[in-house]
Image (cartoon, rainbow, N blue to C red; front, top):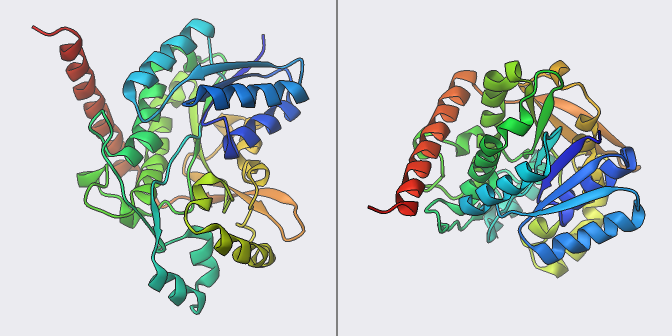
Length: 334
């Protein structure tokens, strides 16, 4: 029986590059593309089958910023498959990123210029908005929608005879200082993307703590600085034209500038080959590319507290319970 990998956000960027690389590693793998935009998903499927005609590639429409769409998509997945071997939680947004020009100029002349450019620490703010479900969009898209997806797909993921893997796309921009248990949606802050990615790291730790005994393991990766639609929206096109040669040069000093989606997917592909029970749940796996274009993966200990991770997990369970109660009431009005 073919192994099955479901990838959210699979129609472009790192998600699509990951799909291509996974089929290059194992063309017997059955890919399930979970995408919001069906036309883009069909185009991605066509491109994958053109290069791997014998592959099996399935499409499921799913928008992780809509819980109704997640539940509906998960139901379809459960109808199609008996188990999932890999669930790549890759879809994410950074809406309306605003560059702090003052911090940007200051960082150029600081000792920490390489660190700042490779993590965007202190450089970016975002204007978040509220979804139809009543959540902050970044929180729901990057984290909570994926959490509900995991909960819905537990019967396909939890098998003690052969472990399954959750693999999250996190970020070097996941900063503890931007997250608070009292404001998990980052309503009061200006860096919801960083907050959501730190929340991802916390949830990863808690999921391992609660699900390893059921045969489900979770890992987080950082793809590095990758040029995708998400990053191109930060600056005007002409600025990127000026900066890209500099970024290629900087890669000789810091290998975090992976730049292409293919390179950024390195850690995601590396985890595909690992025995999940042998991995450290407190480690984030980072994609790196040398100045000469060689890709490699390196582990980095995460700045997370296991007790905080468990409290956050329980908070999400409570939130899920409230959402389901509200949904049931709206479906069955008195």
